[in-house]
Length: 77
Image (cartoon, rainbow, N blue to C red; front, side, top):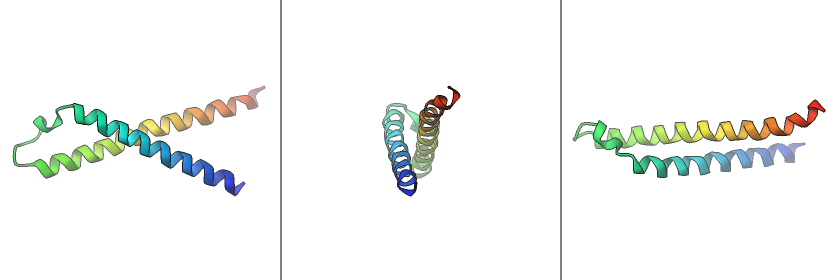
């Protein structure tokens, strides 16, 4: 039981990390720095980091939920 929880926690952490990296790569292709004032580089980077974490975590949660739901469908039959 506890080993299963540990495995699930590890999978969730890896999923979040992977989707955050993917989101970071995608956001690097978008010219978001043009939205900020010229002397606000630090603030722009912080916003991009927060945006990356938010989007990556949200997508990861969606896929984790989707996997859990597909496993729970077997209880219908």
